[in-house]
Amino acid sequence: MTCEQWNQQFSGWLDQDWANRIDLECPPAIRQHAENCPRCGPRLQAALLLVEGASLNRQPPIGLAERIAARLSTTIPRRTKLRPFWIGVPAAALLLIALGIGLLLPRLGPGSNETIVVRFELQAPEARDVAVVGNWNRWDPEAQKLEDPDGDGIWEIEIPLKRGEEHQYQFLIDGQNWIPDPEAPLKVEDGFGGVNSVLQI
Image (cartoon, rainbow, N blue to C red; front, side, top):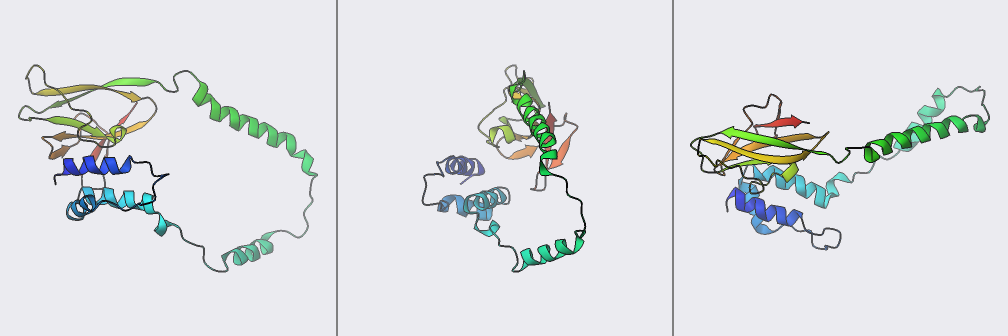
């Protein structure tokens, strides 16, 4: 199984209805390929942590609550002048209103769902196939292919992306060679020994 075939099966497995699914077992073909592939293996491990989640459900140490309560009781002053609780009510109400407005304005304001058309270009005259693969298309090598209509070796595509988000991506040449965008100044490690290009719009 190639990485492209694996990615298609893996995406299909992730896209299923998990809320109504009883059997969470990963298909053997997906698991077998990931065990032998350094690029696909970490993606499967991350997905299994999200699906199974058992190892993340840890209980606090025994007696932790009592130790915290004992520490707090020794640090609180014995004589404190308490104000009536209603004095803080108007301030709390104003704070809640301000927080509510601050949370709603970005959602209700103009351009909250605005997208910008971004043009991606890559000079690769010897390439037979070029794709842009990023977090907006779930790193699917088949989702967005670049084209070279005039045969000048410059592959191009225009993609609408959401404003105000950070987009990470790479180019995939001939289904095998992953490279960051040579024209993008911002880059971060991708966790697999390479780097992702970063686009902020």
